[in-house]
Length: 239
Image 1 (cartoon, one colour):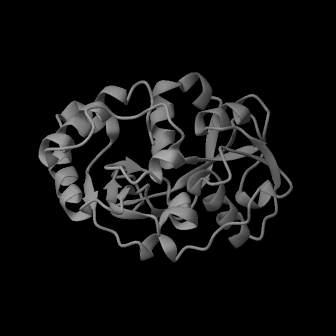
Image 2: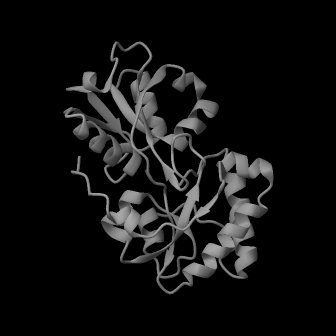
């Protein structure tokens, strides 16, 4: 997760430091396999998933290592939220005005792109139209910027990264609201692994990251949330 061209080198360095602490593990990160194959592999040492896949299908097949803290404004440690964005040219002024509007979403198993906005709008008693399934937060932002959808919900950390890396898109949209914070994307390992030892290695690796790499990844530390922090959240209705 958060595996973008501008984060690739920092992620690679983070993994090398984790592996150095552990004394074992693959020499390189895997970038080209289906995430579900990786997450469910009995050989998995370290990966990151989304909170919704974790509670919907992985929690009894993997171990939770811990949750990264990205230091997002308005969020407790180890939590994040979504920004609900609309076109800068739109007359939509508040969440109530989203009634009947179309929402672009990255995928139906996304906590930030689907579950969080669905819960947020339900709380506001606002019904919406399911818009295009875009495949990524970047593509959802582009859909709103170009008129392909009326609004979208973007992972709070991804939003900060997009603002820096594709301002030509984010300058055409604006933040309308933010969802309530939920636990951030968890680090996981397979059942045969020693999750506690890996958590200690991750914690040390984050502390050892050079400042530039830590800032690129927005990493502040590791939070030891329990699985119940994820499992207590209800599953959303599928798109």
